[in-house]
Length: 194
Image (cartoon, rainbow, N blue to C red; front, side):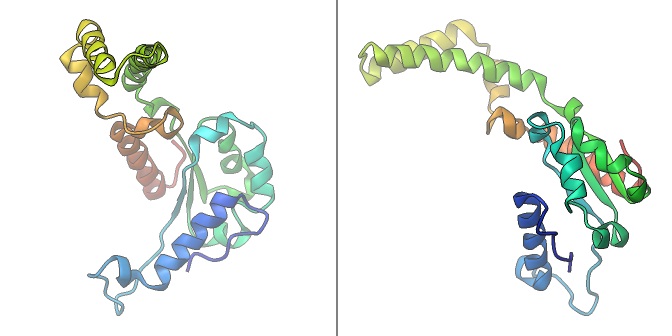
């Protein structure tokens, strides 16, 4: 079991710990190959919040003090905390030395995909303007195709397919999540902040 999340910790942290406990209560439900005799080892915990770090610079040091990482958790297994700025605070506190590690994730952000997402906003703006003018669905679609043909390369259109979510979800970029995941794993294995 992962242990109980402190009631003072943030909602999504508590929800995450509850989910981990649910999975660990019956690992075979999600992993049919699970061998109950061999058991499992919960070797670490990764907390990835990232983007929200930009909204309240003091929240994460306060949450740490209010139980985001509990005494029980910090002594039982390593923790990796993803961060952009303020979320690094818990890893720098003496009581978490050697067991809580911070991974800077901002530099994994897919800047090219963001540029294309911004550029796609112009396509949506053109489409919405035509709708407001009362153009028919067919007229809007034809104008959008024409606008895209004049302003987008085939390569840009193909690359933009990787965008599956909003900016605050890192555009759903596999490039971002793969790099971040690898960094989290390295931090757990090497027990160091990155």
